Image (cartoon, one colour):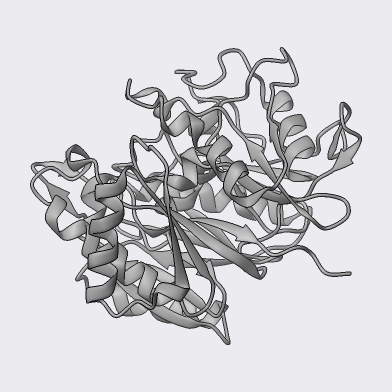
Length: 367
């Protein structure tokens, strides 16, 4: 792990010199036009438990569809038919969602889909990162093309992100990025700067900050240390720290000193406190559930993997005593939004939960 440098200001502004456009990634709590998901079809992601997963997805769509359109990618016509049947069984109104036949390898659209940003005139644009399946799986040929499919469906312009140091395609995933919509971005060193460079070999901290400025409008990048135990993405931020307001961070914190998450969460707290000396932050601790295990493997169970949508926050729950405490803490930070727990003990066997599988499409920014 490289030496900590919690806050840095990029040398470049949030401008793509090739296009002369200024971009800004809005906070997740800004109004959405839609939420994007992909219907589950790849059984090996949930070995032995796949039969329950479509019903979890139906619960997610049911919670969202009266508040914003849910755009659902289906791998083929058979998946479309099965999705319709499950959604109908859950009483989800067809007017609240749209199905699109688009080939996918997996369903984690937070990572495989493009990131929606605002351009200078307030319209939406797609920032297309290169996706290499977390450098862990060979079958990502279809997922790499999701950006083009979303461009075709929405009619929105799409820009392919490139490394500022080499001009090559920039490999990133949306689950590694957290923004407050006011220029600050949270990422982890484990994700991008650890000894094993599985995304952009040789790319420096400073080069990443230039990229975040160019494509996300970042003015400050806060580098935390590590992600949570059981995470197979090399430390995505959305399991450990999330903005609830421009000055407020919910930090997943493990109090038990014998737990694998304790040291990393204490380190992340120290880094946030350091960053707060420059621009004040309210840091609110969010508990972890007890370890969720499957076949002797610890799974990345974290309440921080919540998703903020129009009028609602969806929170993964784990049949754990900490569920109600986590729901209450999150409710306190999102007044006016309904807090909906989504049972995720089976879902997390796929090594992700609510935030990992969703991608928000923000509404155009008003004047």
